[in-house]
Image 1 (spheres, rainbow, N blue to C red):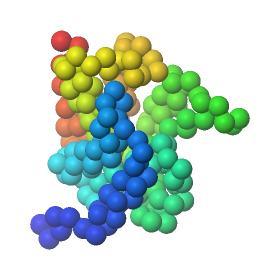
Image 2 (image 1 turned 180 degrees about the vertical axis):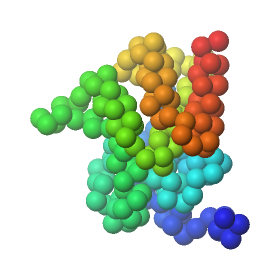
Image 3 (image 1 turned 30 degrees about the horizontal axis):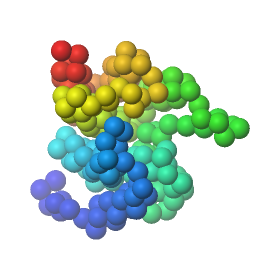
Length: 191
């Protein structure tokens, strides 16, 4: 892939799309603009060796879950492959009556979906987990009560992260590298 551009108009478009979609959101337990998270996810995916579709999906992985943007809009703007990856990464937050689903149910469904997910979707999930864990460790090291930002207790949150790493598998060396990096951060949080 030596002839691939270092950056493209498509990545710029996806970055702007994500920035506008997440413009009023901030990260848990901080006032950091949310778009910082999706940029970090795309950067992790690039460093792990994934191509443009996966990086674009990394930028957009939360737009359907956390904003009014639909999967059809993602597909129209960035193609069916990006939409497919984003779909696998999207938790269903509301039930049929429009009520927020319990955290444990959302996470269980997400873990079940990961079992059949393509490598690209599992890569985005692992990059997402890596950045979330790194942000959590960063906050904890600075004395922030980061656990209070979750809808579950510390042990459940950590158990979910471990289960997600297992669900993503290691059938690709890039996935294994991402999972190992997540485990390293988890171990640091626990020590």
